[in-house]
Image 1 (cartoon, rainbow, N blue to C red):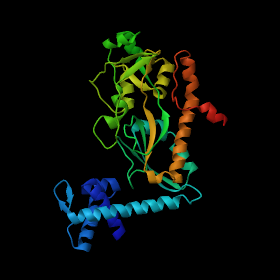
Image 2: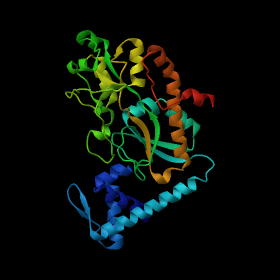
Image 3: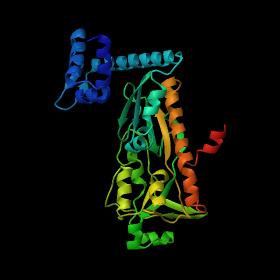
Image 4: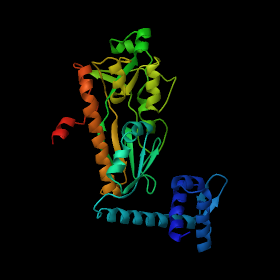
Length: 337
């Protein structure tokens, strides 16, 4: 094992606080990570870590070496980023993190096109919740929700419109609400499931606003149902379709059911007050790298295509009650440019 590889591994060991955590992050075996630590300890003839059954603690000299390894890693990343800007075409490994909802809606149906367009980019996708960009782990994270910390380097891609919906089965059994006060007697899933980063404490500074609807100066906070919790949008949609609850559903996900008559829009004259946003979060040093720039442009183009495909149908279905799927996207202006 090269000494530079051992330094890289030791940096991650210090970051994660365990051999197994570093191994998972790097995609290496625990034996490889352990060998890297042992090699450095033998090389310098010092103890770098104190081992327990589940975690490790850096010794004083281990902390010194870890700080040096971090600086070396950052220097290499800065060099990679600077050299990449001189390439005539985007290239290299691009590590993308996203939630399952973003993967299903944006990445999975379109990733083949991105790979065809950019044959020199190798893509690695990690699907999960509460992900953050990390050196050598994730270059960019596509996050849909609400962020509470502006210190993150983030590019807003689109505002995502949510609407209250129920199934035909639900309204036949429970009646259709005609005013916000009527919702007191109904089961409503709140906003919490729309941003998994805020459900449990984690590194991503996210929050979930209370579910409120508004019309003009009127504003109502809705009661929410807590018997079932999930961070998976598709599970909530299935619960709605089976006639169990009313829920705020992303317009692009709800529209097929509304068009078929399977779903019903609840209180269409009212707007959900605070919409989630689709963000791209990335390391600041990667901002000018071509492979990241072409990915973000590609994702924005996918959102425009979805708008172009579905917005006319939404306008036809709700000619009086506005349903703008992605309020910040003007696909007609972009298309004419």
